[in-house]
Image (cartoon, rainbow, N blue to C red; front, side):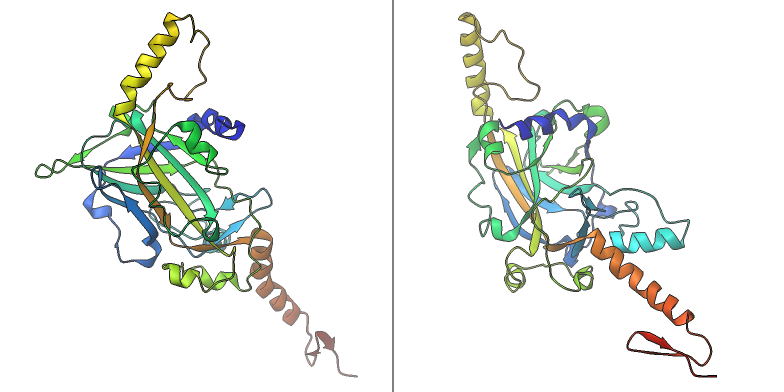
Length: 323
């Protein structure tokens, strides 16, 4: 396992991770563009439905530490503001809710109960041109944790292991179909994107115009459109007994006495990919550019106020009449 993946595991306790019941009244309009998924792949034997319950905007702003501000939204669950709007309202209205960023919520309808300890979720913000056309090649394949981490650059890792079922997991059951519905809520300290940002002009015009089709994404130049990718794995039951036998054999030979690294996975255990999601596409801009376009109207207004009676502006200079 890479050092990066190990560090992410060590930070899991500080991340906000929960599985909660999904209420029918809170399900957003599935036809709303901002909830659209560019790609969705599921394993039918395990999953009936997999979808985002979170709004994604068309533009996000990254600071000099590569943190994406207000991703996927900011303020509160009830407001769901984009970062640019939130900044404006924060300075103008004391009632604007405070907050760094809201959680990303995913609805998973499984054909049977999935123990939280068996769920492993890998997410990342990545450029569409760095991904294959779809993630279908991942589904129904089994991998060790080391294989999963080695194939994904700079992942954000969520492990459901260690959650208290009574506090963090509420399941709803369809009595006729025997399915279970989960809402998975993901919110690390910060979402990062380290690749070079876009030089596209007037990015702010796409704030409420997320890219909802691959055809539209293809009209942009390379490395401009970015997506939020989610890959969900569950512990493959067929490998659990195998792992126990391997561990038992190791102990009988005097091995396995060293303390294992937390969440490193038991020997022989593998995880099966049961579903993948890609959010609607968006563009990454810099907070420096955001400050520039935000302050531009103020500087223009200030320049107008500096013109005295009878003065006028020519080529950016204030011209005063001769008195």
